[in-house]
Length: 130
Image (cartoon, rainbow, N blue to C red; front, side, top):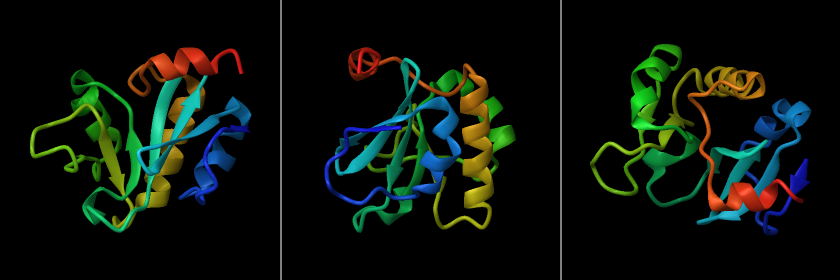
């Protein structure tokens, strides 16, 4: 795993352990930690005192995949830190009873290359050469 993140402790480090076979890259982003696998931004790890409802593991996806992902992750919800509208980012909330189970399932899907999870970003492209 390549860790380009700042010195701030990484929330939910078990995610990185689970994704280790996929050689994740971690970068600090907006006071959280972004996780990249292959050529995609796949997750955001967030545990901050503000907007506690959005703490947990964010899944980078698109609106078109929300319905099918919701079947796999009933606890999944849209993040609210950007406003009340539906966003592409979806949250597996840390305060939900099956948080760890859901996150581990998401990691398995990422390792398998599930096309519903992950987005190519400019940062993703830069990370492929690291």
